[in-house]
Image (cartoon, rainbow, N blue to C red; front, side, top):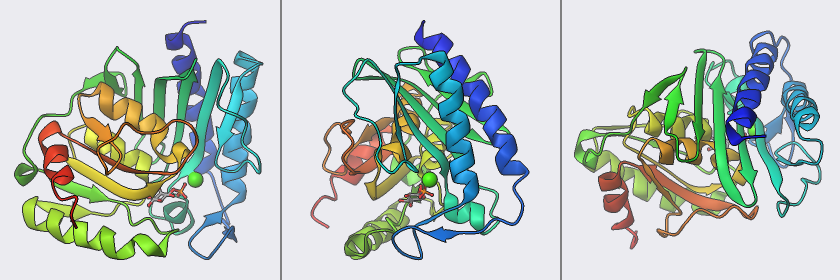
Length: 259
Ligand code: IPD
Ligand code: CA
């Protein structure tokens, strides 16, 4: 099966799962580790739908998903990395800005990414080496300097130790760029970079399922994605910082390392 065929299957699975999100009623948040880290029955339903559909496609595939008690190992030929609802806090509070995020890693190579925002019916997709698309139309991140860009950031809400540094960077980004946004779904932030809406995105701690698909899409659109130390993003399951943006904006951000 080609990577393109796998990407098509992810697109149709996410579109179906988007219906579950749009028709959700009486959404009850259950606390995972603390009041900021929550899950709902819909996260689990979407995840199950994705696993059922994609394991029918590739029975031997492994799944590395946010709402699994024990995600599968990543060292196999076919792996799907899934955040069933990225932006769960938005989902619970009715902000209408959440998505389903799924990356496909073949033989250790992040080969496809698909991120679907059902509220705007926006399907972002990319296959490695073939460019990035929004609802089937090619998207490109322009190489603008940070001064001409909007900055998105994530607050790393599950790690209080990162708050001071996050907001020191935010002050700097606010000063240099046009304005700032905290939209609440890292996968969609990366897609905003891909679509040229935001010129910079950073967050000091994310999980692999938050960034795997969005990073493939952003890179295929011509954006740069690194850890905030300027290294390649890890795909071994560790949490990581992420900076993404136009090549010029990312260079500027990485020059602030002393903050
Ligand atoms: C969260 C969102 C949020 C980011 C957090 C993520 P979740 O994912 O992407 O924007 O700030 O770091 O964990 O928990 O809603 O899937
Ligand atoms: Ca999630």
